[in-house]
Image 1 (cartoon, rainbow, N blue to C red):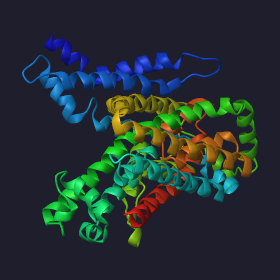
Image 2 (cartoon, one colour):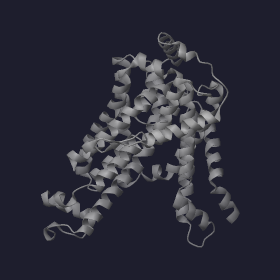
Image 3 (cartoon, rainbow, N blue to C red):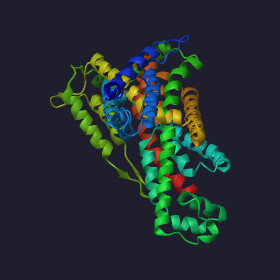
Image 4 (tube, rainbow, N blue to C red):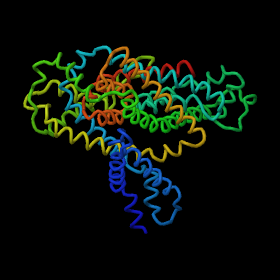
Length: 453
């Protein structure tokens, strides 16, 4: 039994179980719809939930307790798997389509800036309106959980980090003194449910610290609930929207090639070489360094692309340049395609395994309200961006799908878009829109704290 428990909780066993079952699920077609490589998220969620639920039931000293304790401490699968396969996916698609990034900006210009910024703006408005109504009806939900849910639904780590930083800097004492009796009682409820506003004139340092800790916990709870639902929404919509609006993918691809041909230049004809792991390693290192750069924004906090954003940007730029000295960043499309598919397949399964328990567990209590809100926050913004991009800007779905995913800062969404259209071209739209979405998320989160709290 102990050996069986060890096998069934082994990270590699679970990862390949999620991938195998996910690929089988992805092959199932309902009409013209299939999940494709995204199936790994859903089977990963199921496996992740049952493994975590089992771990929580194992008593100390019982069979498999050591394995169960490890799962509860580090998760069903380590964060390192999540990061590695995400980086592998992004660097490969960035290098594959980077030769087109100059043409994309020349052809579409400011449209990507608008789409990248509008999705976070619309999502913030939907969150503020929905949570404004729900917070009044449900005292278990706070504004901290709401902003955490927003960051999670946008799958935006920078927004999450900004919210935590803002929470740590709250002037709790002034907030308490200036609040009415009801407001004071809400603040005290975060510190100690037994405290009464009429008996507490000012807060001690310990109480202020406790309030900030509670605020940070609320943000983390909202983010944990919102993130997996944000991922699921964008993954599903990237597959459903073409069917819902009867978009002919083959015609869209032909139109995209025609549009790009009009702005193609000689530099884009630099020949591609074989897969070069020196070039790949340089790209990842440069990208990670770029993503680590923090740009101060004064009262609005700071801005950075993060590791994933930096690596994608570096891959796009270096591939566009083509060659630096003896190192060529143009590589065989087929080899890079295999690498990106492998990275995406593993990444989807890891996402499901890591967040499976949180997804299903969120469907109870106040978590259900946050989960439903996260769905609306993401979905309404995506549909709004679709209509603006399609009807107002006249963008081709191939490039628009990537831009929408970039506006949602969602790598899993990009993977679903690539799988849906059968081409890596959406990644150019993703790379063009994502930096503006990250910046908008950081600014909006800071503004939210300034206005609401």
